[in-house]
Image (cartoon, rainbow, N blue to C red):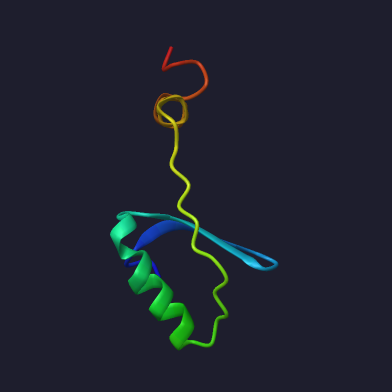
Length: 63
């Protein structure tokens, strides 16, 4: 799954990952289903500009 993104996390019944392109979601779904995973939903979660800023520069704004 690393070919589509990074930060792969598996919690009890939820797989979370940061994908490079939202357009890859159908291919990711096919990959999972072909391996016997029951997919109930694929939910894109977009970061706000503030979240991107904090993720990039840190809590103190790079100071």
